Length: 398
Image 1 (cartoon, rainbow, N blue to C red):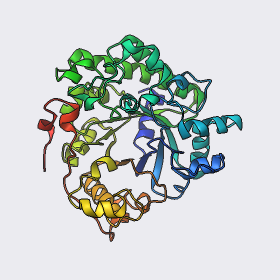
Image 2: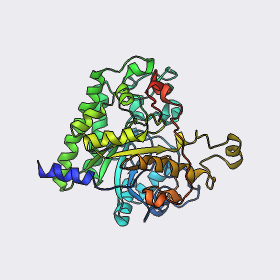
Image 3: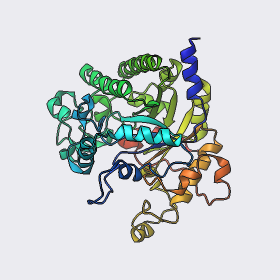
Image 4: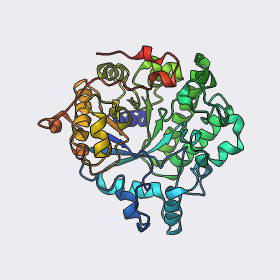
């Protein structure tokens, strides 16, 4: 086997406890008078993670392929206005770049930094002020039209239509740009945010194998590029893919994940998010079958549906995500313990924002979870049928 490919595979299989998706919005919670410095930029999402069990930060600044550098191709897809751009401009004026700040932090603290791409973010469907210029210039490349509420695909019209060559070419160039301009450890292709890629899905019609092949061809192109860049720099770039934790559901959306693994197009898979469709034992076994590390994605957007959470208590305390809610850490710990006991390779977190949360020091291993209160139930979430017609049939309870 090619020594470089073997090196990449060894690197992919290195133990990682927690992959922390920064989930964008790094600066949305900062006080208005917060000085725009690299130190303050870091502290609201990742600054306290040194010494934690987070072995990789998956950095996303929010929205479609956003970046903090206006000279990059990705900048015209950046969300418009608001605190993110205020910070971006201030950092740029000082000669800083948001992603590079994170990379430098990671190097100083022994934490890998991956660039996380939301492959089809559609917050702009409900917030038109966020609609990127590229989408305005290419309405023919969108899954729907403004004002439409499709019956499926989350009711969102503004997604990119991956059945169109121009879209896949644009996405490839944005990803290539990061890989060639930043010394990241890898890239995270977040197909879950949001899971709608082809027009038939919006009306409840089947996504075909031909559709799946288009995404696989894009993954093949990305893999070829990352390996080429990796060879040039003498260090592999890894590819993480976040999808549904069900092979059948993923395939119905257009994600041919078994083929991706069989053809060595991804190095790590992460399953889950809004939904948790099958027992984690199935996900762990899938990873072992293809010798690909399989991470369990645990997301606050699903955990808030826990039966342990009384609606009245949530209202009284400001919500489950409020700092100090007594069940916040126990529910996260219970989910992590269940996944690790099932044999997954590690934990991928989403919507877990505060870098000072104690669970970042606990839920990376069963040993460090031992002795702490944990609460668990099989909680599939409520979105399976919203994204995909008949999606509930893919839920497999323990």
